[in-house]
Amino acid sequence: MTTEPSPDALPGLLDQARQDYQALAGLGLALDLTRGKPAPEQLGLSDPLLSLPGGQRTSADGTDVRNYGGLQGLPELREIFAEVLQVPVAQLLAAGNSSLELMHDCLVHALLSVIPGAESRWVDQERIAFLCPVPGYDRHFALCERFGIDMIPVPMTADGPDMETVERLVADDPTVKGIWCVPKYSNPDGVCYSDATVARLAAMSTAAPDFRIFWDNAYAAHHLTDEPVEIADLLAACAEAGNPDRAFVFGSTSKITAAGAGVAFFGSSPANVQWLLGNNAKRSIGPDKINQLRHVLFLRDADGVRAHMERQRALLQPKFEAVARILDAELGGTGLATWTSPKGGYFVTLEVPDGCAEEVVRRAAEAGIVLTPAGATHPYGDDPRDAVIRIAPSYPGLAELEQAIAGLAVCVRLVGYEQRAR
Image (cartoon, helix red, strand yellow):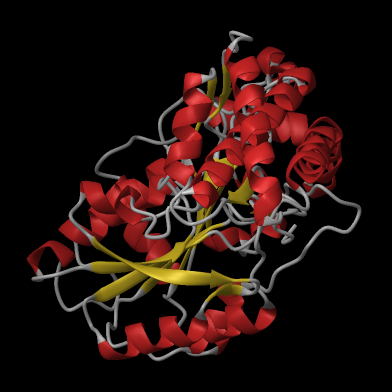
């Protein structure tokens, strides 16, 4: 994927790319690769949820799920996901349908109440900053922007964030209060954190006594191969390193069952769990326990989650294979692009020559293929290299996806050869 054509060949390649683009634009496409939403077929796997819990009104411990209360969530559901998320049952909360809401609330509560280990509320401090591994998840960055939290980009490596940079920044600056992490099949490049990275995150010295790792384990069960990746247990590593309050673990069933009607989870130290429960008690009379009971009856146990995710994989894997096959056929050997081959998760990262990503996205949109905006993978929407494009293969049907990726490759060739011809 690094071979470049000879200068003599460039005019012909550019002319062909322009012809291909004109043909693409004439197709009248209307394709959307912007977000990693489950496809209708994936959602259909969980349709039995819609008829549950039937006539059942109580949880395993006799709680009437129709009534107020139960702020920690149903114990039997927490037991199912304790293994998946690597959090002891007693330290895991089952809440509403969105882990993003939990991340939002944790930031709000840290700003407006004193988080364990803090000397004061974050809102009373002059500056608050978070480390942001890049490329990363745009919704994390949007939360920081929403609350005026400064974002400091940190390069990603094949083992997770560049730990030498992370350790230097957190050791020297007490205003650095947290780091965003998607540790397994990360959004968007599919990186899985190595055991060494997890250990260093847990044990590193931080100038801020209230430093938090926002561990968004969104793809904990979302494998795409026969060899599921396992990551080290961050919560246990933090406790062993003498930093038990450092990790906030988040997860949800959003891409497991019904994306708009799932269950979100928060796991942490006993002190952090009590802190969040105390704050949540002032904003909620309890989660949707009927929906939690539905999930218990549908998934049954951790093995049930794994079996269900194998059915999800059967729908997703052919789409990721199609992306790889088409990119290799259309862009392999051009020197115009590299791309990731994730073992799980929901995204493929496409890297084009510096200065080309925004123009590729613009040309694709003009041809009827809508992509996530260039720069969305970086804080403030600013990719300094203008090189990263996030591909979300999950939602379109296979035929539409193949058409979209082939069209995207046309746009990459056009923009790339135009740049070389200048």
